[in-house]
Image (cartoon, rainbow, N blue to C red):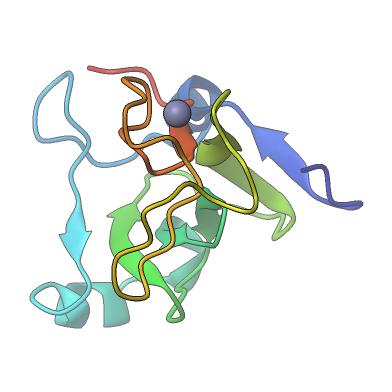
Length: 134
Ligand SMILES: [Zn+2]
């Protein structure tokens, strides 16, 4: 997962370093990509972070991201380093994962996990969250 040049920041470190707007003391305020777009557009880009969903991980990246964006966050402290990103979650192979998959294959859905697996329920991947639950 480690890409050269990128520095992963712990979610808690991100909160204490950049101070995102909060709804209350436990909940970070989320800005919608559509409903809050005017607010985002009129805010200095270096105060904004974007939650993006990738193939195998969810990330919090500095600036206004468009591709694969989920939500925005506005912080009190401007970011200065575009290579600083927060790892929110990754998809990890379940212990039942088999690249050739498990029968039966229904339609074109070819899950790589055991349909009887209690951990992934047949998905073959487990989402590991790095963000602490509030
Ligand atoms: Zn499994």
